[in-house]
Image (cartoon, rainbow, N blue to C red; front, top):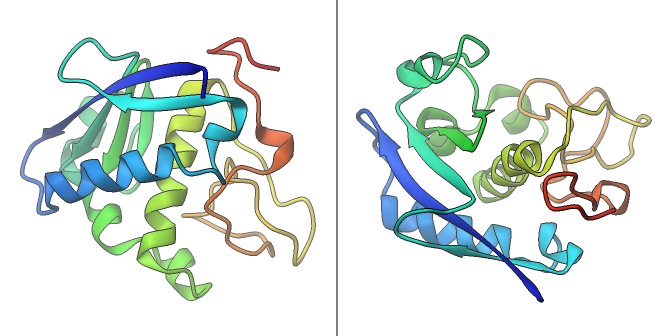
Length: 164
């Protein structure tokens, strides 16, 4: 890929997930050929000064980032992409009920929350039985769609990076 986007990784509060495993899976997800890398970018973790900060947070501390964040879900605030450690560990009821794996949930939540940083808002299921857009709130409700951890072709743009 031609363009490199940098990010940092940190934790907030008491997290139970292994940070090394989290870092490895984030890197794998962000640079997977099925993901945002299709836009011609690669992602690289740096010790400091990244374009965005990926934070693995204790669930109860998510609301400390913004009143728009809840202890139940992951969220994005400015340059902070906050992953709920409880969800990272066990996904959500809707995801598990759909038969989705924890690995795919992790791909989806990273792609979804980084998608917000890239400039995307939420989307709805385009029709029963179709793949859910990665920017659909799949953790909450699949709305009749099939779970999908990767951005659809129609989602491969970024106002943040000036990619149309």
